[in-house]
Image (cartoon, rainbow, N blue to C red):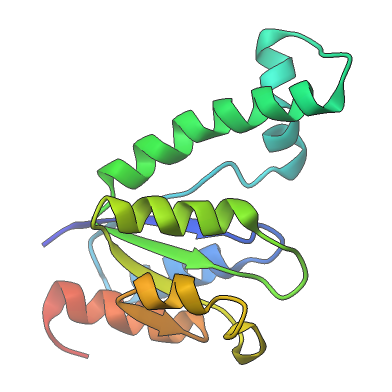
Length: 149
């Protein structure tokens, strides 16, 4: 069985690469998708494509909508959506992705540190698994594909 997995959330660490590398080392057949991880490009994509805006609100609005085209399509194609909430930044877009995936009845895996449990309790409640590290995610993916660990 080949899975399509969307890796959403925090973009300031290499957690995606860790998951992808570990899955490759286990010969798991997975097609990975993700949002734009270049923060500057993600923020500015709307004005780069559709033209400058005088007000920051409209600058951000254009970028958010262009990013949503990529994100929504990838989540809709995914079998499993993994959402990582990082330690440092408030990732409202990750919360949206988790909610959107849940509304589409996607298998949802959340990853965050214990200290964020209370803040993310509603997001965690929508998930089929709440993890603390990439190894737990890789083990879930392996079990989902192979039925073994």
